Length: 535
Image (cartoon, rainbow, N blue to C red; front, side, top):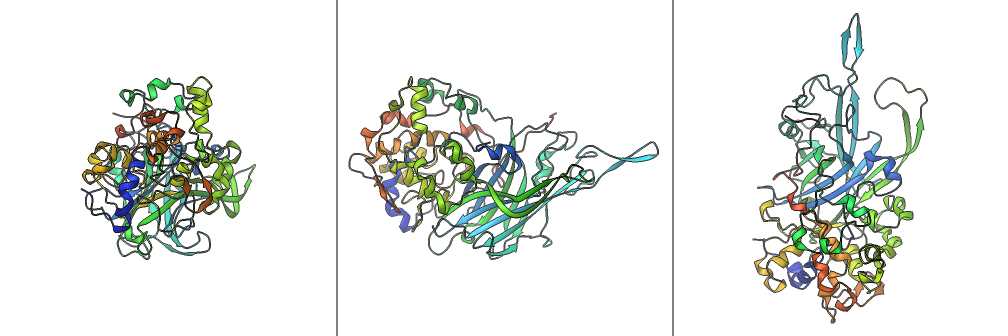
């Protein structure tokens, strides 16, 4: 069972649980953010695919928070000879806002180095450089057979990400500041036991300003997301009767089941992330490149020497809640969103309050009748409340500036994987028969209370965008969703009559079951990557 809910949360949780029964987030996510904006398709090494933030459910680690930022989408396991190294000319960051002002208070900065050993073999009377990443079997950290040594550093910045105070996270064993990254899963002849090899690269770390040691891991993982991607982007090429029938929950294959990603994972004690008495934190990940790049027509011998990069950092990727930029932000503003900061998110407000996705769904699923599915409560204060401020009593900070990010109430205890409801808080309330039976709930630690790898954000968010929250809000505005905290100019009539689908909105899904994706029971939680070959 859950630990007792703190007083500030307990008073309103029962009220908002009804809302969560139909929506656990305001973002219109249909998949993770793979290739979501025009520019980022040209720079996959800095393309964030998913961001997770949750109370750790590994045994003995319940007081920790796990942060996972995945990058470099749609990796094929056989992608040699270079495979999928991260970019030494990039800055990868995970940001935490712990006072609700939409500005980072803590930033974890990852930098990478890829050093060429230039392994040579004797060919006749000459020593000649090999063309591969590896020169033989690999099983150890710093293995002598690796031709490219991948390493990284992690810094913590308190305050502004560029002008705040920075300190290095250090290895709890030996005190060094440089960590080794495992080579990708090339195949079983190169790496006979990849799980054991990767585990050697999970480090216990000391974090300046935090008395409890944490953990860090960076390396390739199996993409943990499950989605009917091709069907969705082919104008939702499935009958409405299929995607509203619960019997078809797992009727379609997971399109990206054969893909890997690169994971940046941190585990940090929850008390080192919060500020004062407020247990709610916000989080998002970004990647930045140097403003200037000069290509060489005659690269020097070495590794990645074809360009010279200089100038200030320029943010090119941003991800908090899943797939915001992909299906919420208009095409003309996708690059702009990736370069933006949460504190300036009111510039994108129209995309949330007047979303195009419900209209598009009506056009493609209801014979061109846009009004058949799109809720009429415009502006969509139901989405804006959850999307920009968090839900009162679940994941809304004590004071909040409206901004898009993933929010986590660190006071709500985690549960083991086997007890997790794939629909997060929403599914748990449904499981116990409604908010009146909330005392029987086991799992209130899921999306939108952060995001775990097991949470089926696709199904939850489809329900949200089609108006499920307004069905629960009722004619009397029981949940207070006819306005948005901090945005006094917004008001609407979020009630059942504004939802064309009515209660049917709760049954929408993408026919792929997120809960069937393999995961680990311990940090870093994401499964062993698919290998280039198998036994």
